Length: 243
Ligand code: ADP
Ligand code: ADP
Image 1 (cartoon, rainbow, N blue to C red):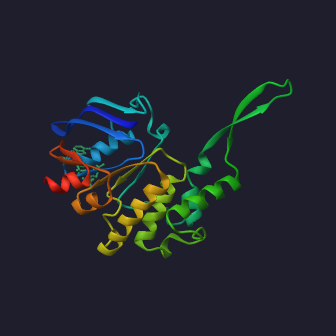
Image 2 (spheres, rainbow, N blue to C red; image 1 turned 180 degrees about the vertical axis):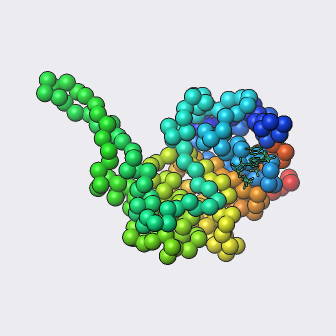
Image 3 (cartoon, protein in one colour; image 1 turned 90 degrees about the vertical axis):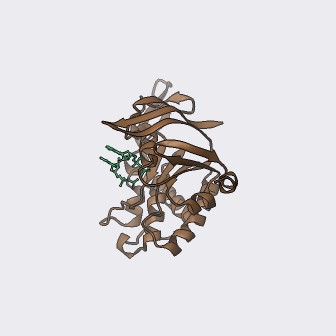
């Protein structure tokens, strides 16, 4: 079952064609990686899915529906960037809970006349705490709530950025070179952790990297890009065996 479909996408900036003839079908729960050199259009494609950019031509469907009318903050999609943009003056709990505190849920109740009504309510403190705890478990940092950002290693900070991105239960997580700022040893470790997080969460991951080994290690499907176009799509085995 497809979750995201890109149909003949083209994206131009003035006289630059950043992405062209781009068609792709992403299945629910898949781990898909865009692989290619700097400037080949990976980030632009991700930004169109996230809603930060509109395609010049073509269509993006989410669960079969055109998402061009859906504002970025209404899409069940979150993004993790290369630089973990944590708030340095907030502790880990506050960093992860930040978005949840703005969130509302629909509650149904009966009014005095016995009619069923709905109203919007903020999440309770207990609900927020439970969600933050669960997100910390997923990234293997249980008990870090009270810690300060400055006491965490780069890899740990990036895991907190991931916890923050999954805490409101998106259907799709976009990851733009999330390991790019880490040293080699931490990167290798995080590759395996991200793969296991993906399996535990069961949500769709769309991942961007210029590192072939990273793409082949983690993904279900690799989309090889160059000059704004798809060169090849396949499983890591298929890509590895026919370079
Ligand atoms: P990648 O993520 O693969 O490094 P990008 O998607 O960032 O590639 O860029 C693809 C092409 O589009 C590059 O030529 C880049 O310079 C150009 N580009 C990206 N964003 C903009 C922009 N906001 N304005 C003009 N050109 C852009
Ligand atoms: P990446 O690390 O993915 O290659 P870049 O550092 O190339 O990203 O780009 C960072 C930001 O700058 C993105 O938002 C991208 O859209 C924008 N950008 C990239 N190339 C250009 C450009 N030629 N002109 C204006 N903005 C650009």
